[in-house]
Every structure is written in C-alpha cells, then in structure tokens.
Amino acid sequence: MNLAAVFCDGMVLQAHCPIRIFGSGEGKAEVQFQGKRYPATVSAGKWTAELPAMSYGGPYEMIVRMNGEKRILQNIMIGEVYLCAGQSNMQFRICDEIRGGEEHGNPHVRYYLSPYPECHGEKPLNGWVVATGDPLQKISALGFHIADGIARKKNITVGIVGCFQGASTIQSWIPEGRLTGELDIPFADRFFDSRYEECFWNHRDGTCYRSTFEPLVPFSFAAVIWYQGESNTSEAESVVYGKMLKEMIADWRAELKSPELPFFAVQIADYLPRADSPAWYRVQEELARAEASENAVYSVRSADVCENKQIHPCNKRPLAERIVRRVLKETE
Image (tube, rainbow, N blue to C red; front, side, top):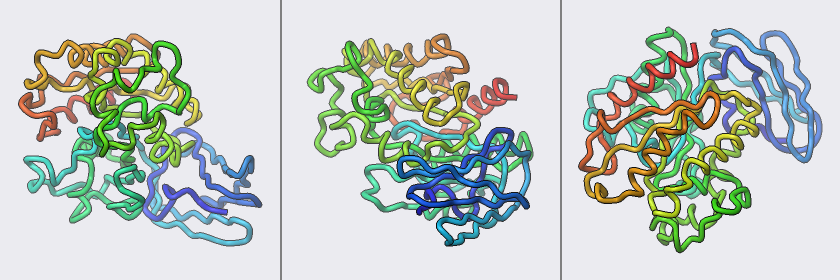
C-alpha cells in the first residue's frame, strides 16, 4: 500500500472540515492522530481514512500503518489550505517577479507543488516546504502573496498547493469525455496552445486533470483560486468558456467531496498585443460572470492592478492583496 505524496513531513491539513488521509493499494491501513486511531476503507485499489474536523494547531505527529508497515509524519500543522490552480500566471514564481529578491518569506506559509506534465516526473521542490530562504524563490508568486496575507491577517499557518501548468487549456483540467455537444470544440477551432507541439498536455482533454489534480483527490481545501483563460482565447472557445468553467467547478467539487467549496476565479489581465481580439475580452467577461453562475463562485478583477504590456504581469502583490480581501470577506 502507498500513501499519497501530498502527505509528508511539514504538511498543512485543513481546519474545521473532515480531514481525509488516502493512498493506493489493497489491504489494511490505519491512521493514528492525536491519540486516536482511524481505520481506512479500501475500494477499487484506493484507501481513505477520514478524521473529524479539527481546530487550528500544531505541530503534530501522525502515524500511518499500511499492511503492517509504519510511517511517522512529523511537524504537521492544521490551518487553512488553498488550491492555487491554472496556467502560467499562477505558476509564475517569486524569482520571476520584479520584487522577488526583496521577499523575506513567512515561516507560517508552507507550499506543496503537485507534479505537472512539464516536470517530466521531476519535482522542483521536495514535499512541503516552508516559504523562507532558498525554497521561497521557487514558490508561486501569486500563491505566496495570497497565503502570506491570510497568514498575517488570521495569525495561523497557511498551506498552498500548486496545481498548474503553463499554457494549459481548461479542457486539460476536465476529465476526458466530460465535454460534449457545444463544449466539445474541434482542435482546429481551438486556440494555438491546443495544437502547439510543445504543449503536449493540451493534445488530449483531461491530461492536467489526471497528472496534477487527481493525485490530490480527495484532500480538503479551504478554497480554490483559479487563474486561467489565456490559452482558450479562440473565437469558438471564448463563447463557451463560462460553461466549461462551470463543468470543471462541478467536477472538482464532487471529486473533493466538498459541494460548497469556494472558487475564486481571477479574470485574466488586459494584454495590449491582443487588444483587437474580441475573444480575449470575452474570456475576461466569462470569468467576470462566473460569480452569477453558481453558489460560492467569486470573480476577482485583475486588469486595473496588473501590467498590460506583457502576458505575464510581473508584480503579483496588488492582485494578491485584492484576492485576500475577497477570500476573507466571503469565507469568514
């Protein structure tokens, strides 16, 4: 039996909702935490142990037994955990940011990077890392600034899980075969990123879902922060982007066993080289309208706080501060 990679020393578990520890394989598994034992259920080659909701705290130790083998996980915190998902503007690191060298980090922020297709199986970070020192430079800039703001406001430990792939389409984040009818857009009518040879993760729907999102299921999160859309700015995709986003949100909530999981959809920034593209602005509008499409979906505008001369706005702090305000308003 195996324990999912997200469970390791230094991890942050979500407070105030059920905590699910899981892995793969057949046999017997048990989780021991804070003096209590929780047996796992096993089905179709996967196992899950569910722990009750707990308050903020730590550091704790956890013992996981799988078919008689014992693993001890240390330095565990219970705090708020955010799934930071999307494409390159979410992936953009502290070291890529204009102000990157000025950052001193925050010992109350921890970061986990889920393997993504471009990694080719290699992880640039090893498990959960504390957002200080050298590891800080490899952390999602937007993710860090969001977590830093929330950690300082609430005086708690905040975990962020990176779940992204540069130049990925929304179709790559939805299980293959789920998009039908008008949402099943021929590749010839999709934006160039779907056909570009090097963007192999877009050549088949569901690739990023399988490689990057699915290994995290069914982890408990406080919210999802979604920043994507630049790779879906063809005419055909732009008119149904909102419907595809709604399909993805419903699927992710079901897989994460959290039907009311808050989603914060960041509107893509203005980009002057595409200022003549109705499709670009239509995707912006679809992200803006996401708030009205379903309960607990919130849209965050970026155009007025981001540079518009490059597709990757460098300074992510002003946008992060806006997201933090919205997150705290809607989730407290």
